Amino acid sequence: SISSVRTTAYTHTEADHIKHGTSTAVGTNLKFGKVRSAAADWSVYPVGTVFQIEGSPWVYQIDDYGSALVGTNTIDLYKPNKSEMNQWGVRNVNIKVLRWGSFAESLNIMKPRSKYQHVRKMVERIEKSS
Image 1 (spheres, rainbow, N blue to C red):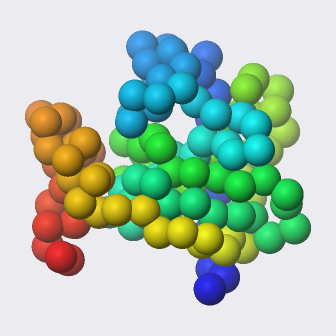
Image 2 (cartoon, helix red, strand yellow; image 1 turned 90 degrees about the vertical axis):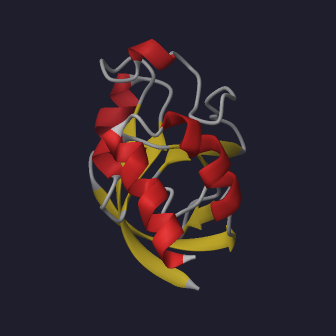
């Protein structure tokens, strides 16, 4: 099914990502090839969710999250540099989920990080809805 979502873009040299470098929340490297990394609220789009933006050849995979995304229906798309990030800006796009990720896997990754408020919020939401 196709749904409309708000998208933003991020890159690994932004201040709030510096400490993570090119690592995702999953611990893999940020991807920007045929499959590209994206961040979301994992209680909405669980880790491993694969989607395509209508009219775009790329496939995105949710392998990251961000505190600003929690409680929003926003997906943050990884870009390799600031100019591509700025070029994207904020766009409302239609996405088609090709494969849903796993809420159980999302919980496994997040539970040990529950000292962070945004992580705790996502964990609580998943547990409430399951």
